[in-house]
Length: 139
Image: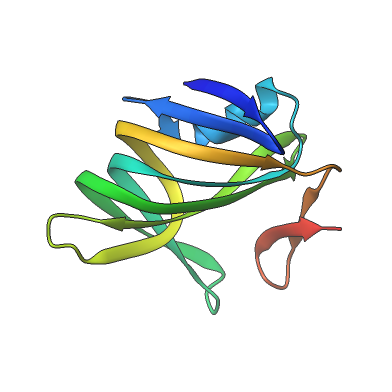
């Protein structure tokens, strides 16, 4: 991974083999960024997406093997259990040009990922909301 500092944050280039969303959280930890948003594009392989089932209060997961265009990535980074956590959603497409999307549990960069990190000027935490079953932003 390479990065440069730009107005309002950083521009990242992830390389083949880097794993999302872990690389984004690691970058924020290493640069002492407790809170941020991020957006990006690129290409991933061997992706695991999730859909949150509100009734069951669990994520249904699906694996997408092979290579995928990363059409859009959006994440927010907040502190959870003392560490930056990158809550990340993506839209992907394959050779059929059909979009698929959801919560990104994992994906490996297959070519590159170009991500703009916008830092937030104050720490934001995640706190468990038991009635929902998720750790939500806590202001």
